View 1 (spheres, rainbow, N blue to C red):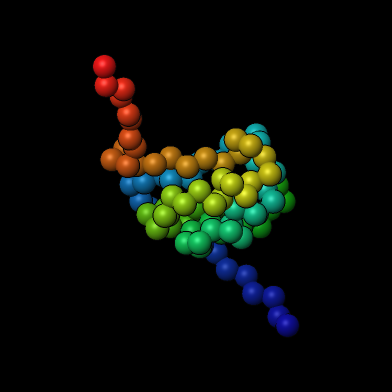
View 2 (tube, rainbow, N blue to C red):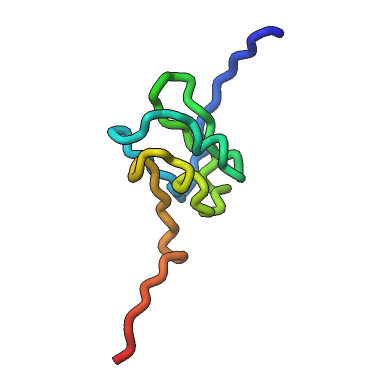
Length: 90
């Protein structure tokens, strides 16, 4: 089998659904493995978080956050129109 190398650039998008904390992320790549949308591309460097290639395709399912072994290393940022705030009625 021959080794194939390629380069990729993240696609520009107005959304930024997945944010990594580089101080907490151990670069295990579990988030990229579990992503249903295949928007995460594992980094080729040891200990570096995956690249978010197509952020506009994110379903905001949270699988990447749930599978992460380090709490706080990855978080979802929902678009403003998808955020809800419930105010108690008095």
